[in-house]
Image 1 (cartoon, rainbow, N blue to C red):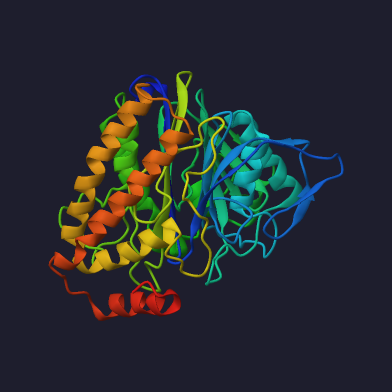
Image 2: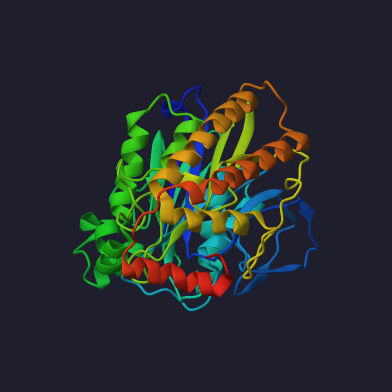
Length: 434
């Protein structure tokens, strides 16, 4: 379960493009922040994706990926040309194939091959039609679904939604958000041949004039369980609230949104943009990584948490020209490692569940000043975003998490229900984060 947001010039302060995403996946599923350089490829070269092998492009762009550790593809990312993409799982009446390109594969391939948002979208469409989508996208639990994507650059943005190898898209003019629900109805700008005809044939609508993508193709039960409609409405309300004045800080705040509840508790309240896992049935996902992008003719700025729960995690800058991953950043995997930032933060975050209201206030107090100064310094060009700056901000972000984590034992504890405790105890036994 995920949420992706975008705002273009008319909706933002300074006429920039803003982009953001929370990647909601299984606890323990480390999501690494990786940078892959631009590469030239041989004419007959192929690329092995998560499940299938396809022809490689002649050249692939330098890309930033937020990547589940066991996949080829990525949940979100950007490329050297300022193209940004996030994908969403959507659930339809048509059943997913057991193999093909995953939505994350398609996202990475589009970033590697598209120099504009439109080129990236056309890449996904072409690959969908050539190879189809499919394959298990769950880590420990089997999970198959269709996909939608939000694709943006400094000039334009598109929402692209798919069912099997069919697709439909709309160009965004101000702001938009997608979640785990088909967002297009009759408002698409283009649609692939066969999508409407299939709906009529299956009896989901009477004719082309009666066609509505969401109503015809949504699986009502799984879509309801994913709570995407409520989260999409929440993100859109927050985008509209500051339309014309949206900033990087606003996008970070939206990704941390707990539904406007001052009394929010992870074990009681679900269906929020900042997702917290609570049980094996309805709320088994949490926000395991977050990203915000700010691109314009003035520069490209990308911020990631590199850790779960954005409400507890500072963003730090990354992916400036000529830079690599921050000093001290290590990629993680299935096994817990105290040297890996994702796991280091995760262990502290799970302890914070027992002290949540106080822990949240402590973390956010420390994060707020750091991020305000960071964004102002970088985007107002008071400092140059080079490798030294990236290393420094990552080190400071890491220290913030460690500092508020060191205060947890002195904070009051809260009581959790039996199901919530049992759910997290199971993960503690798997990886030693308890």
